Length: 319
Image 1 (cartoon, rainbow, N blue to C red):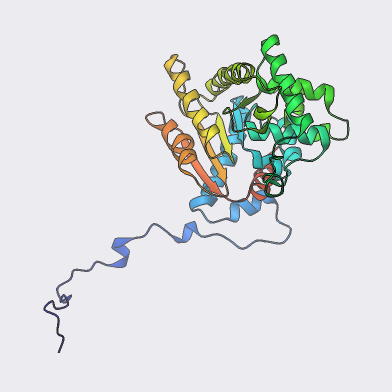
Image 2 (cartoon, helix red, strand yellow; image 1 turned 90 degrees about the vertical axis):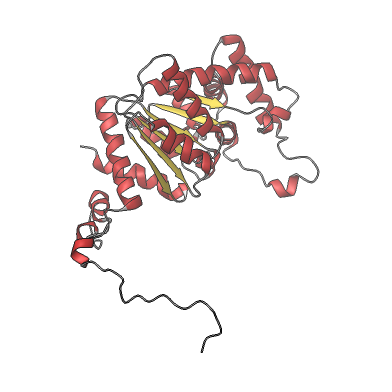
């Protein structure tokens, strides 16, 4: 006999219902289909289950295709790892196909892109150079980026445009095709750079000017707000690999556009990252759609797989 005072509940009077009456959220029509050898990527996408991230991926592809068809804005916010994962050629190809109408970067993205354009390499071994203070001390990166930023201040241009123009003069021909900033500049596709002072290695260079950095990045923020205005009624914003800066910039841009009485509703937002973080979820996927319609999607995975996959699906769907 049990020594506990409490006794197990008697389930003999518990009510049940027929399974057919209860139903279920997952049904036969939601099931995926096995891959067929020789099938196209479009067919592969159609064979995925009609559930969760597979449905989100289909919705994102459809939204981007429709945005391009209707001439709506398709904006990509790129974190630094997009460049470090070797995706610049994919991004440039999407520009040429009309699947990117504007680009936003944080400071890290611009640094990696600038170094790729200058030297064909980027991403230093932080652990080996931090102990003696050599981290972030590359002369050409600091000097040339800050010279371009100062030029932006004098020429009344934004940070992204100034860096693209500088690379048009500086980048060797063999590296130039791999720079997002340069290729966007040559195509007159707006590229904006949004920095937080002190987060980026060029800020420690003797040539750095806080006034020039702030003015150029603020101009880019205002330009980005103008681009965000174009999301209304069918545009798409993709946040790819930025966990803090770009989600915050995007949310403020949405608010500024609406504060100025421009319509901004009925658009699609997407967060691609290998980890889902708080700010991208609330500032990109959720909050912009409050009382405004549209849809937000979160898709988790490695950039070097997800971005080429999305690009391939878009290319496959072209007429």
